[in-house]
Image (cartoon, rainbow, N blue to C red):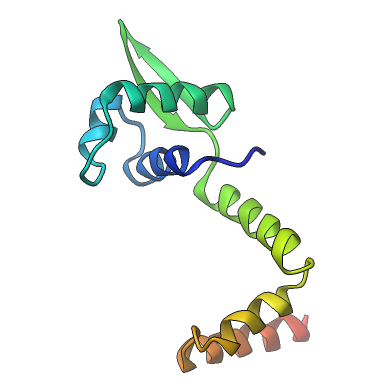
Length: 121
């Protein structure tokens, strides 16, 4: 699975959140300042070429839908992050967040619960 550019991810997030959509609807739901309609159309076509998006034709209009789920892309991105920046070590990733105090006590408790559950398996 290829990496997406920031603009491609923005369009994918719109499709994941909205579901099947026409380009004009994707554009309307984007935060301001919005890109040009031609820019969004181009990005959608690129995403289609990459296999992330499919479409249904309605005459000359196309309604686009995600072919890759947000969860699948997120999992792949997380694995890439671990590999590229944390030597394939989830522990190093968690340590980076814990040491910078970016995880609060409730999140730490949840992580401990998950670790205990995994150990019990």
